[in-house]
Image (cartoon, rainbow, N blue to C red; front, side, top):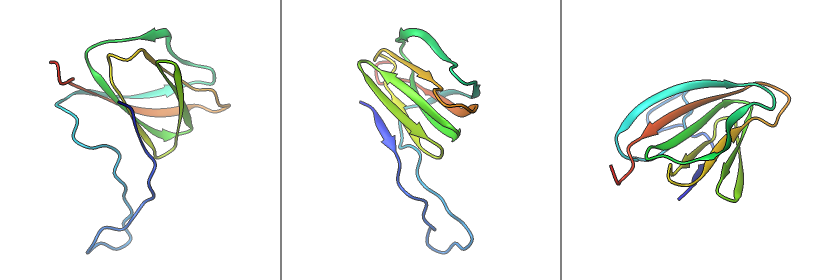
Length: 111
């Protein structure tokens, strides 16, 4: 199941000068995280791959193209996307600028 978070920023109750939006819901135990700088036409892996861990991709700057099975999703700045690791997938930058992505890997339900 893929999930794209695109909702707008809001100000929580009892806050001021503070804007936030949810990037992901609970999704198993976090195993590790990384920040990636993906150059123009960069990404990978070449040829989709699968594995037990799930991913949450959060685009910090630019735009990412995520290939999930036979589908393609565009994830823009301040959006996030959940990838089931058992679905063939890869992530690419098809823009003219460097894309910055935070990747959080979580345990799958099968682990």
